[in-house]
Length: 161
Image (cartoon, rainbow, N blue to C red):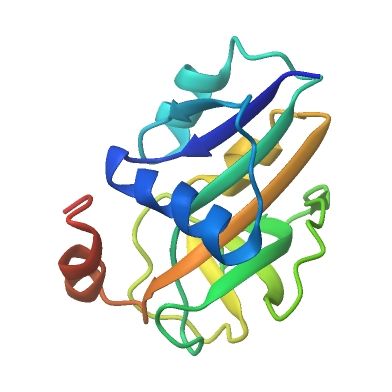
């Protein structure tokens, strides 16, 4: 089965080594794909990939209350639309069964989240769009880079501005 490791930005590449060192998760045969940030970049960069593949998404995420530097294994992903409710399919994420790692929902957004009443979760800009493409197996580990602060995120990652 084909395997991919998906990261949004080149600056997230060191997280692949961190995952390997901290958890022993290694996918040496996996192709690393740098998708770009956000929905359009996800769709364009992943549209041609084999849907029967196993996919590991590794990246930075914000959280309203998780400590910076913690890893979160995502169990489910949803779009973040706090002002409206509409029916959406449940997008479950496979578990790597890592010991001592928080498990939480990830809310994907089309913009950087600067404030939220949602607690005990993480926010990113890619995972829901990855999950909606229907890969056979999807895993996701998020590194908490900020507490909903673009400044803190940028200081750590030197990523999107």
